[in-house]
Every structure is written in structure tokens, then in C-alpha cells.
Image 1 (cartoon, rainbow, N blue to C red):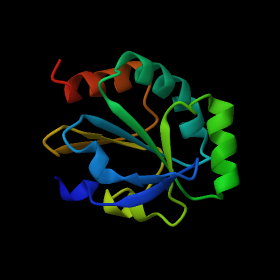
Image 2 (cartoon, rainbow, N blue to C red; image 1 turned 90 degrees about the horizontal axis):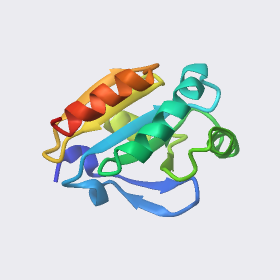
Image 3 (cartoon, rainbow, N blue to C red; image 1 turned 135 degrees about the horizontal axis):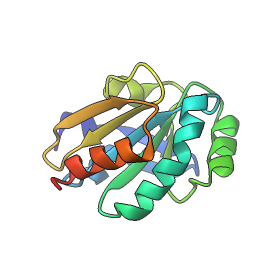
Length: 135
């Protein structure tokens, strides 16, 4: 298992989440903050991509604000069907070397990663996901 996936967190729903549960799968981490206009503008593309690329695990990693604000962002953007981690202290952000929102981390099943700073348009997000899947 890649070292990057050795973390524990809580989802915005309060459930325990183990990074190890993603091992061997293609993953798209979306690092966002509730007050970030770039993040808000990307939400429709993320929502669409999650429906299109069902073999990819999409994980939102929320930080830099209160949990109440994070939950409101998820409700406002209609992305509640995705897993969103509450990372107000930035532990997962630090683990993956993220220092700004919006950033995506695309992880292949072998653990190799590629980062992309946002905002990403639908076309750019799709291109990264196709690359992640080797298409």
C-alpha cells in the first residue's frame, strides 16, 4: 500500500475513513475550501466526472474552515454523493503535500500520483481522468 494512503480521517457525515480503503484503485482527490470561488466553480465538473468515470474513487478533502461551512458547501454544490473528508486541521492536506485549494491529486492503482492546481474545466478534468485510467 502506498504511504500516501496511510491516514485516518472522518467524513463530513461523521463516519470513520481509512485511506487504505482506496488501495489498488484509481483515485481523484479534490482539495477544496468552502469559501474558495475556484472550488465552487469546479463543483459541476467534479459532479459530472464522478458520474462518468465510475471506476474512479472521488474523494473531496475539505479544509480551511468549519465543518458547518463544509457541509453547506457540499449541499450547495450537490456533491453529497461523493465521499468528503473533514480535514479542518489539514492532516490529509499535509500528507499529500497540498498547500493551496483548489488542487487535485490523481492517484493510479500503483500509488503514483499527479497533482493539478485548479481551477480545472470539465475538459481538463476529463483529460486528467482519462490519463489516470490509461485511455
